[in-house]
Image (cartoon, rainbow, N blue to C red):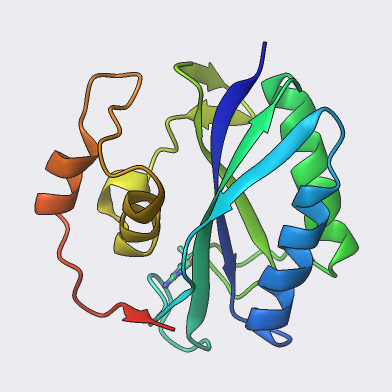
Length: 160
Ligand code: ROI
């Protein structure tokens, strides 16, 4: 069974636009998967510690037969391959962040993976690109994307 997954991409180091383009190339190569659609790219100020560069974010839609933790492993391998270093600082800068936002209609609460992504409802740089791909989306927990959007101002996002 193919499941539709939405993946959040983010970068604020080492040429963020190139990082996102390279990551999309890697997503397109994932086994048992098909990259279906990609949102526009958006720039925004960092959420969290302010002394770091602006971020570039996007959302991708992927159809996959991989299981959730298999996909997570594959995404973390792409992050590492693009030079991601795990630092002690919480919410610090990163070359590439790939977050599983939604995985079909699954609700996952595992140590490594919580779906829907825990912070997505409050992050304009996730919700607005996601809405480009799936404006009528309803999350597995019943929330509607349209409702999340009306509680999350576009403010601060710059569509590139
Ligand atoms: N801030 C923005 N604008 N975009 C991100 O992708 C992002 N990712 C993060 C933190 C550090 C929370 N801030 C961010 O992980």
